[in-house]
Image 1 (tube, rainbow, N blue to C red):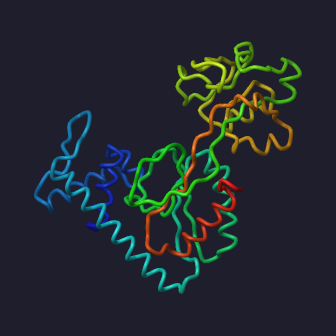
Image 2 (cartoon, rainbow, N blue to C red):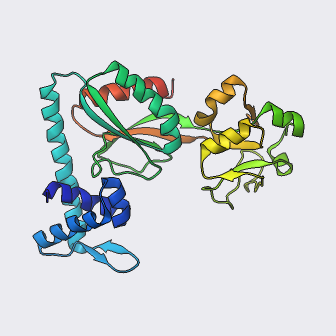
Image 3 (tube, one colour):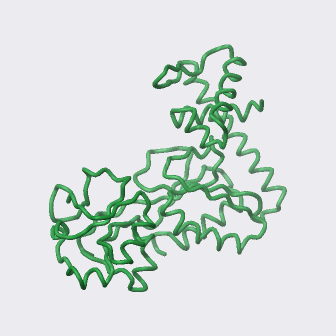
Length: 298
């Protein structure tokens, strides 16, 4: 097996915490992930992972080897970027791998990607949508879009994008039939559309009204934001969802916003990419376009 590939698989296992998650991240079967790990352990003559029926953890040798793998993979990526830069004489070209959260990526980032492809015909893009935190180096991503606070890192550049805002809204038909609430606390008397992936005990949080979240009920819930959006447009209830998912409906008047001054606080969004002394043109041009379309001043 390719030793560099095995190192990347090992890093993915360490970062994700399981063979199954690493297999998904590396586009391999769990059996093949196990073969890569066994090969590395046989080559080193030492156990890298201590495994039992419920969990696994790095051995002392595994922890040391993990840091070496990260450094080696980073050096390989840098060497490849230098070669690509020289080969294409400064023009954007090659493959650009991007990871982004599902809702933000599918609704906003994908739009920027299509514009980027039209501008740069020599570039191919892979956009991987997942709410899992991907490892840029181990999974060979060039760019990541992340929602929420970021840990400190000396290896990544973080560029701020527009904050991730949540919107409460309903269709004009629903509001005509059931009335328009003037205060979030009145939502207890309405049918609310809930996302099944949210913690049911967490409730809907609002600024300036109460320390505790509102625990709201309704006749329809789903694990898919698009399904909830369609239900809201059809007049099935009041919706709390990301602004990026609702922007077209709000602009067209199919949904009307509520509680503009009492919305949940927005979450920070950043574009991340590995720190290089001279980024490849494909990366530099994509970052520029993302900041132009989704930056704080956009």
